[in-house]
Image (cartoon, rainbow, N blue to C red; front, side):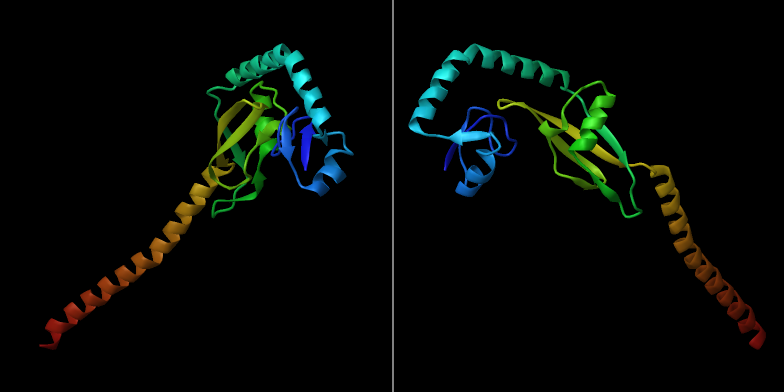
Length: 188
């Protein structure tokens, strides 16, 4: 089923775009919600006429989107999250947290235009900000442990505990060797 979208829908298309969707999705969601209309020949003619008349307006919207994108150029985020000893996050980091961090930097970006695979482990990720259908910005996101110092201390303690029994065993082996070396000359 061909639908003319009346607003931007992330993952489907942008306003005034003709998209193919399943019939049920179009009939039961897009059309009743006012997010799209059936792409009949007359609707396509009206769309073409409207696009001609709005060409300069669309160019201005694209220029505004490019200006917003330029403000985000070079921005890299570092998000601290609670992490287990294995590096697994308690919860996840997603678009909402990226929007919050951008707001802290003074960049007002709606979380609905941000797409990011949910981060469930410590590491580097990429968030995409869709300002316009032709303007998308990639923001590198680094997820770090909130309690990194505590985790390092715990790892060092664990290594020390593992190394201690090895050192004790080595000391005992040396003591046994020394005893046998002392007993051997006495036996002669």
